[in-house]
Image 1 (cartoon, rainbow, N blue to C red):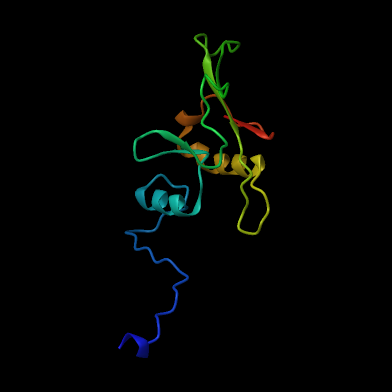
Image 2: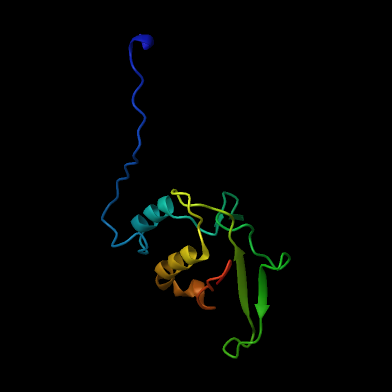
Length: 132
């Protein structure tokens, strides 16, 4: 029987059922976070073992590799503040154009106001090294 039937066509779409419609994919509600996770990528992400793993970043910033440093020259933060430097890997958009720090900055600007506690040190700089 299997030789007489054709294989089903390959599906090219994903159908997701949500309760309610988020205002944007950057909203802070479960539906928006689900959609954003499917269509956006982060610099780093937690894996199944709750460890940070790289996504768009070349490496996870640490004190040991110089990606994290404590800055004490800010009068507003007398105990110092932690500065993370992310170096982007050579990732590309689906059209072949490289993902740049400008793209990451745009995403930060879209997401940043929703959770300002994540970005107390100020906005990232628009250089090849992404800082936040």
